Length: 501
Image 1 (tube, rainbow, N blue to C red):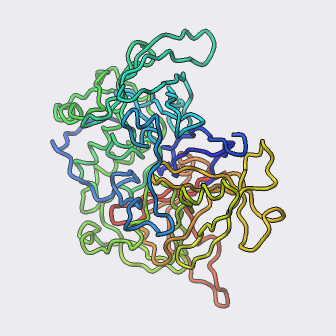
Image 2 (cartoon, one colour; image 1 turned 120 degrees about the horizontal axis):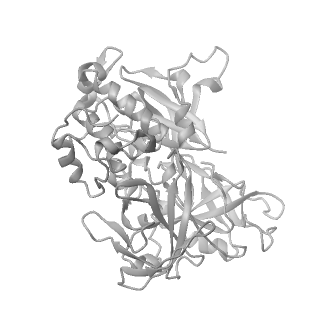
Image 3 (cartoon, helix red, strand yellow; image 1 turned 180 degrees about the vertical axis):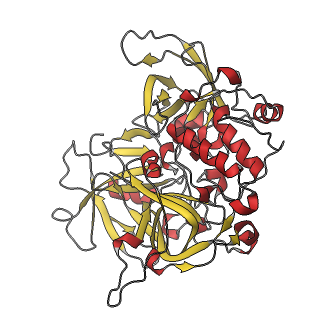
């Protein structure tokens, strides 16, 4: 995925986000080494059944952060980060955005100090969403927290941005050991409230960040669609006339009923939210047996017979994942296409290998786990003290002083490894799977610099024409790529986007 490079070693989420997905990651501080650093209307079921099609939410899929699925060369142990240890917090505190109960457009995020391992300092970023709630978050104020072991409440004086902004003392408390963790802010009316993890709070977080497609919603029972649609209103603090809706959402920790139905205006909704509400409402009006019929086949009836995708263990929404597929060679499997392709994840080195590089050595960076293809990695001998790309990758046996591609290194807090960016903003990827790729019929794809625009211009995927005689490869039109992936719990893709600049 294309990413903006910050000077020095970056602490960053290895995917948006995924997805991700992708709008879910945050820039965190650099570490310097040798360089510079329509609402209710219908009553839902009292309890929400689980739908088989899900977004790329971390809770929905298999993680690759297990010993069983990790390559032997990237066996890892986690980083010890002082500030996180003081709060008894895991890396999700850095990687997540926390949205305000009753006002999803207001949020906080956190970043670590330059000396991120040893510093007790944590910066709290107060943010508001842009007017369309699509891709841009605007800073409201920042405050530094000097953490102490076992202390969960801190006095803050947030520094507000803009002119004529008065800085007032407030208090922040980390309730991370609760059944539903949250962060409470008190004292300043501009900031006070309770904040919950965006990724962990909603049934489909992506209904707020991308334009959904029918393939994402095929198997949702009508009752679930009603709840999904009204969840958008609930996130904005709307109350409901229907008692069953009030009961359902009142049971959600993140919900605050702040506005009476007749006082709520759809003007607060983004275009994404409005379009998703419209789509969901349309699907609600279609009988389930029709809604989940694909090319004359009932998808719901087929579900139990569908094989689990062989690459499912490599799909981890907390990390960037690459996909390529040749639709000219796709086989029609009824409700899905089976196309030859590949899956890739960020190439990584261990902490021990990183230390070796820092001490002037070179290490082998595996780029294809199947073939063993690799490049060498070392310090960039030509980088000055202010160089942002302090590393080089090059072919084995070459002299790095005369040959190589500039790279920068990223610490992956969750996996305890390091990944790399090359040529300023491209993640160096490692192929981990080659074989059949399962794409649900009706799946969409799009390309742009951000998820909102990529999904706004998305197109439905179809199997392409066969490769012309005498040619070995399909035309570019039928070769599709993605680095922000959405899929169901069996690994069948419902949407994938290529986000880059």
